[in-house]
Image 1 (cartoon, rainbow, N blue to C red):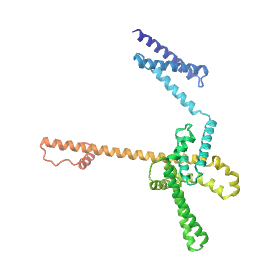
Image 2 (spheres, rainbow, N blue to C red; image 1 turned 45 degrees about the vertical axis):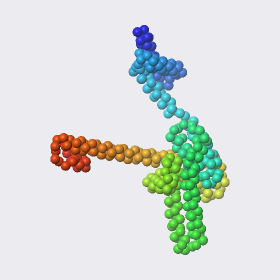
Image 3 (cartoon, rainbow, N blue to C red; image 1 turned 135 degrees about the vertical axis):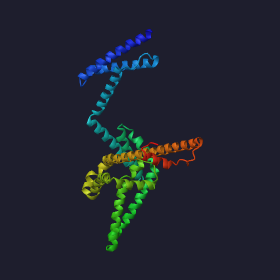
Image 4 (cartoon, rainbow, N blue to C red; image 1 turned 180 degrees about the horizontal axis):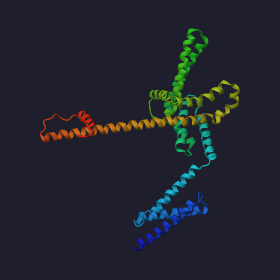
Length: 339
């Protein structure tokens, strides 16, 4: 009995302290250091009360305690939103810089560029989704190793296609006339198809498990189904690289940026668009899954009704033909769900 009285006294004390903190916080939009100290003490008292509640069952969380916890969560969320822009920018800059260095190192083998790009997109998606400081180097090379076989095979296929296109280009240059016109048309079509594939090829490899053939197929379908998103990704990658290669002056002035931050920046920016496309895929998959589950439920429900009717007919001596599931469902729909 005395233990219960002591618990009630402590509960009343906690309620009073919480009420005073809530009142002071509502008056001051930016609480001072004293207010923060009082808040911390109140949190400690709330946690102590919770521990006692779990141990002896005499003290329960009151409305005041819950109210204070909700207020504390709102305060934390506000502080998280008010994270300085400069700090977020510097964190993102550091991550992109580290990713760019990792990408350059992983691409030194040339045939490893596919795996390096896959790891780069994978890490960019992780950073944007989790918004946390990841272990860039360790996780990057972990993704590089995980997707190495498939991404390298895809990159070798791309290199093979580029080799064929180079041969066709040489024919266009050296063989003027009808043959050159034909190969020019073929070359343009192949360039468009390759651009459509490359926009989503390695991001798909980074995100989804699939065969190489299906990954190529899905990449081109995604680009055709999201032409505006494809255009943004294409411009992010094509414009800087094209002008860098086209003009030797530009190349000699900014080549070092590609070693330091350019590839990471282009991947990070294009990942924002790629993630939006992947979100659409996820929503579509969830809708299709829900529709499939609803169909299964409806089919199971109709089957159950039919089975019950057939069983009952044995006991009632009904000479009617067995109930047909399809016929029952049609009749139910026409009668508004009533027998």
